[in-house]
Length: 134
Image 1 (spheres, rainbow, N blue to C red):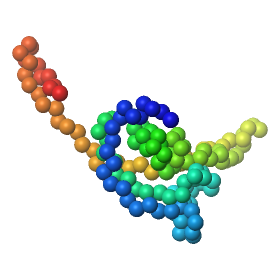
Image 2 (image 1 turned 120 degrees about the horizontal axis):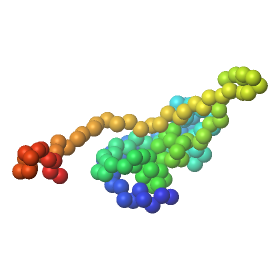
Image 3 (image 1 turned 180 degrees about the vertical axis):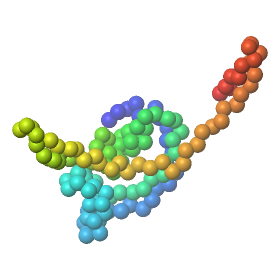
Image 4 (image 1 turned 90 degrees about the vertical axis):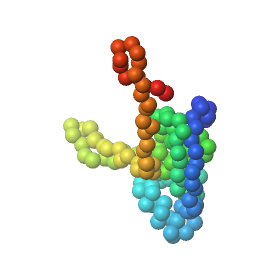
């Protein structure tokens, strides 16, 4: 995997119950709800769990990359192993060329809270301009 994810920091704040996605009718129903396209659920996925995470550093795709690197890709995340790519769906043809669309997977990632730290300001003597203080 990508070892650069180790440079990012996140805190797992809460882990919910594990829900199976194989082995019973209820599990199969959950699987169909999460991965609407038949065959898009990775074969090795047997359960899903809700996890609350706090980012302590910020990097594009940090949650997706770190969770996947630890063996827990997000449901529906084709880019990081949480879903298998699905074939394009034919929608017609024009001039002998078949047109198709690719149905995107639903990525199971939600932001519940977003906070910004208000920077403290002081007057800089030169030109009396406001300057942020880290």
